[in-house]
Image 1: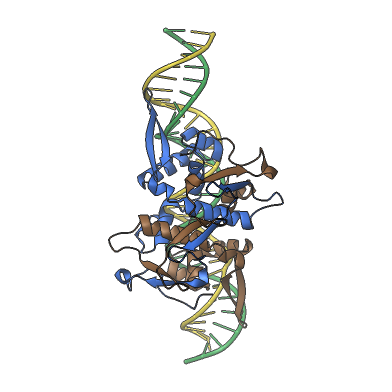
Image 2: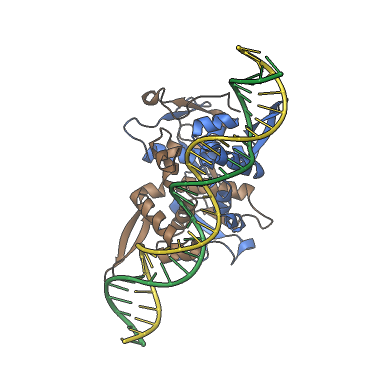
Amino acid sequence: MRWEELDQQPCSLARTLSVIGDRWTLVILRDCFLGVRRFDDFEARLGITRHILSDRLKKLHDAGVLEKRPYQERPRREEYRLTAKGRDLYPVILSLVHWGDRHMVDENGPPVRHRHRNCGCYTRAVLTCSECGQELRPQDVEVEESPAWAGRVMPRKRTRAPE
Amino acid sequence: MRWEELDQQPCSLARTLSVIGDRWTLVILRDCFLGVRRFDDFEARLGITRHILSDRLKKLHDAGVLEKRPYQERPRREEYRLTAKGRDLYPVILSLVHWGDRHMVDENGPPVRHRHRNCGCYTRAVLTCSECGQELRPQDVEVEESPAWAGRVMPRKRTRAPE
DNA sequence: CTCTAGGGTTCCTTTTTGGAACTTGAGTTT
DNA sequence: AAACTCAAGTTCCAAAAAGGAACCCTAGAG
């Protein structure tokens, strides 16, 4: 399977990865959530080559995750901002950060903390069920083919029982 | 910045991506959560080349995300299973799936559904605050340098206010 | 003695990155 | 007026990674 075929697959994860499943895309998005908007700022902060940065911003724009908004005319300059679709990626970013905080820290501990303004506490992101509000753990979630996709779903065969 | 330098950075997201921020790694992990454990099964399901699959499984094993467990002797065969560290990636996977379900579906809707065994409902993953239980939205979260990292944190400069 | 299964490795070609220099339009300085 | 600066890219070439196919090893089965 080539990378470009990924968004054709009947799998929401594969399709999401066709947009953001790239070495650089997620660190670009991290910076978007931190308020970075301009080409040169991304370049300076990320240590990415202009070449690749240009390509990734274009792809994120084409995917509707970022929008370009002019911030001056003569010469026209545009900045990149998250769209609503892009802001919906926040859970992905926070889950990744949380895992790193838990498993990839050194003796200094996590480099940044997240304070939840609503309650004032340092917070950790917890994934919960939209219906009952309990924490979602892998063993509590049963994956079912939806009827519309019956027989054509990406998980082609169940090889053995999960954990 | 080269890819290998990413895990040196004082940023939990960058460090997480140094382990899983790869084209193939997340689809391999998706299959792990679906119960796939063997080399040939991964290969058949993913359409990945054996070369790359071998490399990614080795990296995930080295990172402590997967463990090899023998399931027969003579000839010795081993299968790959998620460790506790690997299972902690579940929120990442579910967040990605959820975003795809919301933004990347076609007329058939999401290809799979997730049923929460505890409450019996089809569920959507919601990110909530570990302290107060409310949903975590980008605008409610304030990012602070932790004291141990003051002045050396990856977000090197705040270029302008966030959204 | 050959075939199959499982789990890889090797070799070679194509694609993607990394790195650095060049471009464009407009304002500023000398 | 010529030279310099800024922001946002684009171009070109070398290096690294991925794709594809064939080959290797161990061991049991026919």
